[in-house]
Image (cartoon, rainbow, N blue to C red):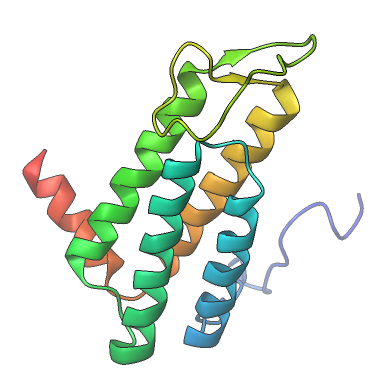
Length: 151
């Protein structure tokens, strides 16, 4: 058995826990900046991209000013990501040619919202990454707790 197959154990049989260093405000700022760039390169409708970018900028500004994101901003961002994921889920996925008349400036996807499998996967990856960044953001745990109470 290779030593990499299982977590290391102490003599008494207890498993060592890995120590996770907390993410810094600078790392979060960088993550939100990278997400903004990635969102601009997705096949989400333009209006959806702009709304998500605006909310990411709001989160960055809140981190700059307060080292945390307020509940309202966090909930708005969570909702916007969920709506974008729903748009992608409902899009027509084609393995053939994407029509030339496909436009992404319509705002809300309609039956013309067509994606290739790779576009869908890439877009979902960006949105998932944004959710992971959001979860790591100080203040967001208050928003997710508020969501659980409401449900």
